[in-house]
Image (cartoon, rainbow, N blue to C red):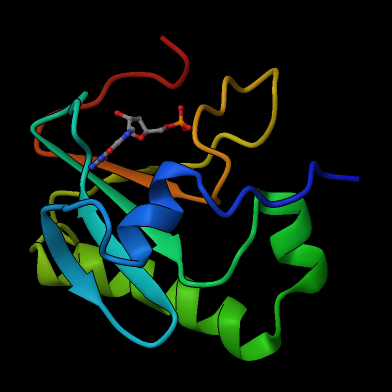
Length: 120
Ligand code: 5GP
């Protein structure tokens, strides 16, 4: 089982508007904003609005609408940023071994250069 959701994690505060973010997209299911410490020329984080720690509880508990909405939002962010042709990388750290720092599910979108091999 995943850890309980911490409503005071930094992305929960961003969702509530208690902490600012550099927003690039939002809809009923998702919010996307620039990573504060970018690791590529384009580095966007896409998060679901729902209270999910990581991939496990999201895939197990989220509704079909939430899952579809989140997946569509990730694609929309990439499309809106003009990244379909040049390409981009999606990455989601889930849990300790992956080094997940913020306990609210997020997908990293990296783009803007040739990204090289995975896990370099
Ligand atoms: P993780 O290691 O959990 O997969 O990634 C967390 C990401 O969140 C990191 O890339 C980190 O730079 C980013 N991050 C942490 N705190 C903030 C914040 O307050 N604002 C924004 N925009 N990004 C943050």
